[in-house]
Length: 127
Image (cartoon, rainbow, N blue to C red):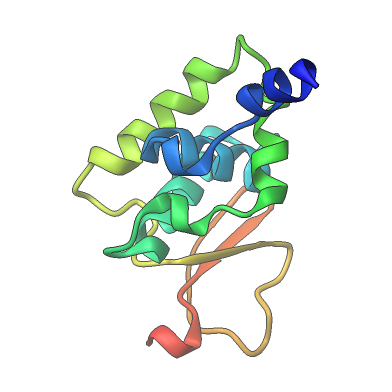
């Protein structure tokens, strides 16, 4: 039974996660393998999507598990991208709050940016 308590203590706790940690999870989950530009735009689009809510409100359990696979040597890289997106006033995403690999879904809003294999757009309902 003690090992269950130890394991529970080691699992990510969303309520205790910082905005930077949550944004790192989103970037890694959604855009790993993309260019630095695409990672930065994804980070800023996530900030745009969160609006006045916490970035952590965008996280789901899938992303929490994916974050555990961020290699230790890459964590500072993802942390720097996340911190910049959270603290920078300029909007590299040009107002985009959504992204997709390949094509923008036809029912969604205006394309704002393209980088790497990703398309960044504003959701139609937010326009």
